Image 1 (cartoon, rainbow, N blue to C red):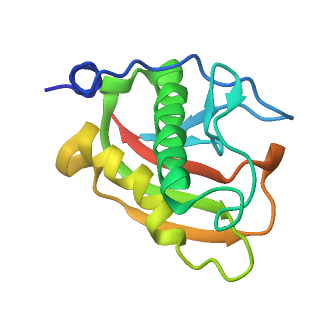
Image 2: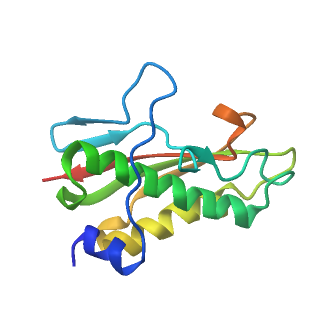
Length: 151
């Protein structure tokens, strides 16, 4: 089953890639790798949550936001090279805007990791970093970027 077919099975469609907030592009290909810019948890151009995880945003809300970030990253890849050209997700980096004392960053970024596993199966297994930060653009609770290998 292709990644596009899997998204249909999951009841999802790829959104239009987000317009960059500054001087960058949503994704870049070099050789057989595609690097995405950091993706925020936006739907229809708006953040689904704002604030710090562990304060204004729950860990479960942030996990769902990370899933949405990953979907938005797939949209950026699709716009550049086509989603079904992905042969492996290589690396995921998740940034979590964390309230003081919040240490659940790995669980939040699991939202992205588990989603990529649903879409790509074994090829969605990847290396990963989950980093707590004090602020993210637009007061987003989560930002996710990824590196994918393509045909």
